[in-house]
Amino acid sequence: MSAPLTHTYRSGEVHRFDAQGQDFIYLVSAGAIFALDGAVGEVLSMLDGAEMAHGDLITALTNGGYSPADAEDLVRELRLARVIVSDQTVAAPAPAKPEGDYPLQALVLNITNQCNLACTYCYEFGADKIATPNGKPKYMTIDTAKASVDLLLAQSGGRPAVHITFFGGETLMNFPLLRQVVAYATDQATAQGRTITFSLTTNATLLTDPIIEFLAEQQIGVTVSIDGPKEMQDKRRVYKSGKGSYDVIEPKLRKLIARHRTRAITARVTLSKGVTDVVSIFRHLREDIGFHEVGFAPVTESGEQAYALGEEGMVTVLEQFHQLADEWLAYALKGRMHGFSNVSETIGELVQGTNKSHPCGAGLGLLGVSPSGDLSPCHRFTDADSHVMGHVSSGIDRKAQGEFLTKGHVGAKYACQSCWARPLCAGGCHHEAFVRYGDTGHANLHYCDWIREWTDTCLKIQGTLAVQNPEFLEKFAERKGLS
Amino acid sequence: MKHLRPINQKAKAIDASVEAQTAAMQDDVVALQQQVRPHVPMGCTLSFSPGWEVDASGGTAGLCQPVERDIYDCYVTCFWPVQVPDHVNYSPDWASNCSAAAKDWRSLDIIFP
Image (cartoon, helix red, strand yellow):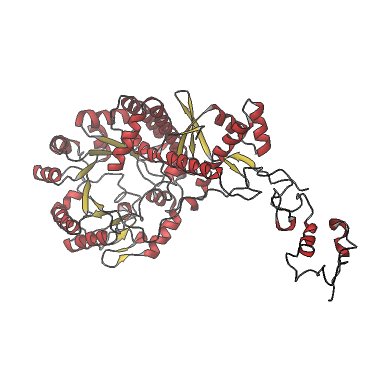
């Protein structure tokens, strides 16, 4: 008589963590988070680095005091949830690659590639630039802009709401066009019974009262690129003369935030060598200037630039990130929003249980448009000949798009396959990878440890809230669903 | 689920799916070799025509009777009268040299009616 078919179990791909004395797992194949009872903990400990046959596992559990029926129920529950996996079951598939004609959701219009500042670390004009703007238009024309709007509406597959972000260069150097586009796009969308929303990114130097009035009236979201208080802002965010920009923008920002209440006004800080004092930057921008949200990102560079953050800088940054993360949690426990975007964004994804096929929407639901009308995966690839993905007049180049998305899929990144943080990270920014490794499909290996540590920190925040203030997480999920 | 408490939306979706699968298992038709075993006592099948069934491992070696017994199902009870000799009219002695099917099946010979 042959041996009956036996299942041999091993642990599924899980990241264990604890918060407030409660054990949790982050289930990597799905992006799901579960709180565990002691029995699951025992099973996972038994299967830690080991395999066990079904019968042996049941025997071990019954020896530990469980009834055979309870032990069978437990094993079945874990197997169905893929917390443990059998050698007889098919592995969970990687997140599917979206359809070839995935509908657009947003366009980033680079309405000019000109800028009145000369920030030394700029990815568009600095040492690591990939843009090749020579001989191309410097300002987008209204015809190109209208064609962009038409493309967005035509290629968005009937989505009820779409979005346009205005970008530069310095966006406000082409404000007359921005006004026209808002009017045209609103008319076109309304005629189709759809809604369209807008946002822009600016260095704030060219803000005027009428512009602020317009942004508030039209409910246009505003992100300001700013590096903190004067001494930090003026280190690298300078005019071509070398003069710092802080004194110019500070009064304008106060006016903007006082007048514009229809959308969140956010600050986006670039961390670079010497600009690592995250806490004091946050205090200044959130509490003094009054931004609603403040987000930080290390400067993108090839690894050789003098302004690079470096290992030491990164350690300082992380320490201070943790300090702000603790504050974020303390606020959340009282049901309040703190404003540190780096936590809000990650929690937003954890609440949903995001499991990404690609690091972001670039080339998928989002495309960049250069002043000439060339399409690119996102605004960071604007005007780069090497990354053209069609033209607003001729449509999306599906072949180039397909190649970009195939390369950028998390399943194509070898290093990501053994990493538990891949549901959120998926290898990281395509542009950062191109600047660092010359390949948009390369995992951003220089960030891996940092991403894992940060994801773990945010998981613990989520776990703590699940124990102490679950209502906050529910409200947060609703808010994210609306945004 | 009894042991896992969902904390995010994806976990809630998995919870719902596991509950649905567990409920479906209560009165589902499943293969003998499928988990969760055992559906029937070890070594048995639900039909006493062993050659047409599989054992709890999905094979035939663990059946309560040898697969070769199946020949008699065809020969005596005429499930497939065309493919085995007709024991009523022409070949009443066809299996007389085969007293234990698993051992003696080789002595069953081709006949030319």
